[in-house]
Amino acid sequence: MPSLGKIGKIVRRSGKKPEISKASRASENQTSKIYLKAMPLRNLSDLNTVKREVKSGKILILKVSPLADKSIEDIKRAVNELCEFVKTVGGDIARLGEERIVITPSGVRIWREKTVAPEEQVPTAA
Image 1 (spheres, rainbow, N blue to C red):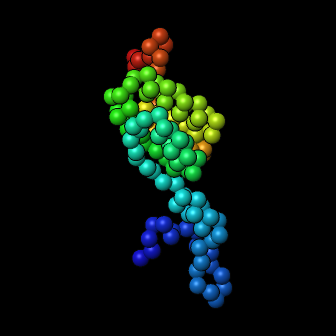
Image 2: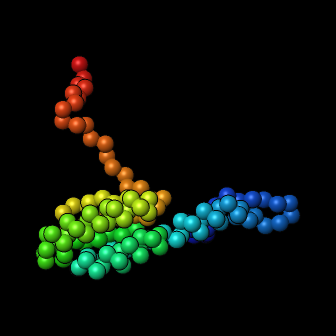
Image 3: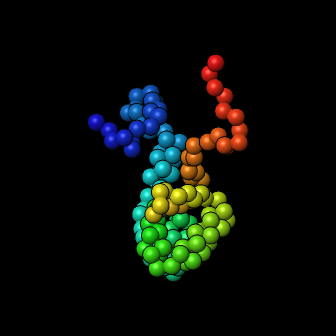
Protein backbone atom coordinates (compact mmCIF):
# COMPACT_ATOMS: atom_id res chain seq x y z
CA MET A 1 0.00 0.00 0.00
CA PRO A 2 1.52 3.43 -0.92
CA SER A 3 2.18 5.94 1.84
CA LEU A 4 0.01 9.07 1.86
CA GLY A 5 3.02 11.16 0.85
CA LYS A 6 3.29 9.24 -2.43
CA ILE A 7 -0.32 9.71 -3.50
CA GLY A 8 -0.48 11.93 -6.56
CA LYS A 9 -2.03 12.16 -9.97
CA ILE A 10 -1.21 8.98 -11.84
CA VAL A 11 -0.24 9.29 -15.49
CA ARG A 12 -0.69 6.19 -17.63
CA ARG A 13 1.53 5.74 -20.65
CA SER A 14 0.91 3.00 -23.16
CA GLY A 15 2.72 -0.20 -22.24
CA LYS A 16 4.45 1.30 -19.18
CA LYS A 17 3.82 1.22 -15.47
CA PRO A 18 1.82 4.11 -13.99
CA GLU A 19 3.97 7.04 -12.89
CA ILE A 20 3.38 9.97 -10.56
CA SER A 21 3.27 13.19 -12.58
CA LYS A 22 6.03 15.79 -12.22
CA ALA A 23 3.51 18.35 -10.92
CA SER A 24 2.47 15.99 -8.12
CA ARG A 25 6.10 15.32 -7.20
CA ALA A 26 6.84 19.05 -7.14
CA SER A 27 3.91 19.80 -4.82
CA GLU A 28 4.91 16.84 -2.63
CA ASN A 29 8.45 18.21 -2.30
CA GLN A 30 7.18 21.70 -1.43
CA THR A 31 4.85 20.50 1.32
CA SER A 32 7.42 18.15 2.78
CA LYS A 33 9.78 21.07 3.44
CA ILE A 34 7.53 22.86 5.95
CA TYR A 35 8.27 21.94 9.55
CA LEU A 36 6.62 22.94 12.83
CA LYS A 37 9.02 23.64 15.68
CA ALA A 38 8.30 24.49 19.32
CA MET A 39 10.86 26.38 21.37
CA PRO A 40 11.03 28.60 24.45
CA LEU A 41 11.88 32.30 24.28
CA ARG A 42 14.23 32.77 27.24
CA ASN A 43 15.91 36.07 26.38
CA LEU A 44 16.08 38.70 23.66
CA SER A 45 19.11 37.07 22.05
CA ASP A 46 16.83 34.13 21.10
CA LEU A 47 15.11 36.43 18.59
CA ASN A 48 17.93 35.95 16.09
CA THR A 49 17.37 32.18 16.18
CA VAL A 50 13.61 32.66 15.80
CA LYS A 51 14.09 34.90 12.76
CA ARG A 52 16.55 32.47 11.17
CA GLU A 53 14.15 29.54 11.65
CA VAL A 54 11.20 31.44 10.14
CA LYS A 55 13.31 32.60 7.18
CA SER A 56 14.25 28.96 6.57
CA GLY A 57 10.53 28.12 6.21
CA LYS A 58 9.66 26.69 9.62
CA ILE A 59 6.47 27.42 11.55
CA LEU A 60 7.37 28.23 15.16
CA ILE A 61 5.41 27.92 18.36
CA LEU A 62 7.18 30.04 20.95
CA LYS A 63 6.61 29.65 24.66
CA VAL A 64 7.08 33.22 25.89
CA SER A 65 6.51 32.68 29.62
CA PRO A 66 10.24 32.14 30.41
CA LEU A 67 11.02 35.65 29.13
CA ALA A 68 7.83 37.13 30.60
CA ASP A 69 8.82 35.80 34.04
CA LYS A 70 12.06 37.78 33.81
CA SER A 71 10.81 41.05 32.31
CA ILE A 72 7.47 42.27 31.02
CA GLU A 73 9.25 45.05 29.12
CA ASP A 74 11.46 42.51 27.34
CA ILE A 75 8.48 40.43 26.26
CA LYS A 76 6.73 43.54 24.89
CA ARG A 77 9.89 44.49 23.00
CA ALA A 78 10.30 40.94 21.67
CA VAL A 79 6.70 40.68 20.46
CA ASN A 80 6.89 44.10 18.77
CA GLU A 81 10.15 43.15 17.06
CA LEU A 82 8.69 39.83 15.90
CA CYS A 83 5.57 41.57 14.54
CA GLU A 84 7.74 43.95 12.50
CA PHE A 85 9.90 41.06 11.30
CA VAL A 86 6.87 39.03 10.20
CA LYS A 87 5.59 41.97 8.16
CA THR A 88 8.91 42.26 6.32
CA VAL A 89 9.07 38.56 5.41
CA GLY A 90 5.37 38.25 4.52
CA GLY A 91 4.58 35.76 7.29
CA ASP A 92 1.97 35.78 10.04
CA ILE A 93 1.91 35.88 13.84
CA ALA A 94 -0.81 35.14 16.40
CA ARG A 95 -1.23 34.47 20.09
CA LEU A 96 -2.02 30.95 21.28
CA GLY A 97 -3.41 31.44 24.77
CA GLU A 98 -1.48 33.28 27.46
CA GLU A 99 1.92 31.63 27.12
CA ARG A 100 2.50 30.93 23.42
CA ILE A 101 2.64 32.63 20.05
CA VAL A 102 2.81 31.08 16.60
CA ILE A 103 4.90 32.56 13.79
CA THR A 104 4.63 31.43 10.18
CA PRO A 105 6.90 32.01 7.19
CA SER A 106 5.93 33.61 3.91
CA GLY A 107 3.07 31.83 2.19
CA VAL A 108 1.53 30.39 5.37
CA ARG A 109 -1.43 32.20 6.92
CA ILE A 110 -3.08 31.71 10.31
CA TRP A 111 -6.84 31.23 10.18
CA ARG A 112 -8.75 33.66 12.36
CA GLU A 113 -12.43 33.39 13.10
CA LYS A 114 -14.28 36.53 12.12
CA THR A 115 -16.20 37.95 15.06
CA VAL A 116 -18.99 40.50 15.01
CA ALA A 117 -17.97 43.82 16.53
CA PRO A 118 -19.99 44.66 19.69
CA GLU A 119 -21.42 47.91 18.23
CA GLU A 120 -22.84 46.12 15.19
CA GLN A 121 -26.32 44.72 15.40
CA VAL A 122 -26.47 40.96 15.22
CA PRO A 123 -29.33 39.71 13.05
CA THR A 124 -31.79 37.54 14.92
CA ALA A 125 -34.28 34.99 13.69
CA ALA A 126 -37.87 36.20 13.62
